[in-house]
Length: 129
Image 1 (cartoon, rainbow, N blue to C red):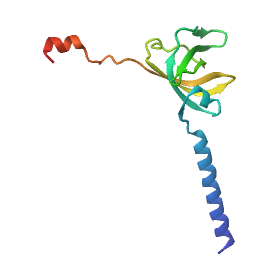
Image 2 (cartoon, rainbow, N blue to C red):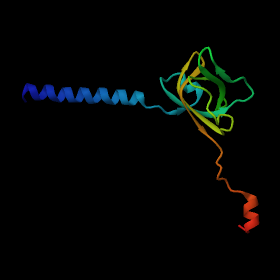
Image 3 (cartoon, rainbow, N blue to C red):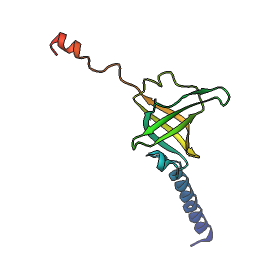
Image 4 (tube, rainbow, N blue to C red):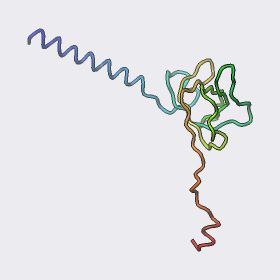
């Protein structure tokens, strides 16, 4: 084989390996708060713990609240934006970010709110449905 061909193949293999390694590290999976401590980026699903303080701080320009993940772990979540309008109505939250010193720093927050299109039992009775 020619040396240029060998160098080209090695460069392609090396570049592909580096690309796959970086892609694997950038993929975030759904985990609980304990598992998120060992990852650089995580998605955590849970519910708002409304028994604890929450609010927007004008000094830090961050919204913070406590969230309980699906395994029952409760952590403080810091979100660098104002409180979303429908935050209190959300039935489920997904926060995307990283754990730092037992606090989850969310870069994104998604909310699942109750559907306004749920079945209406009164309507079904009235129509015989």
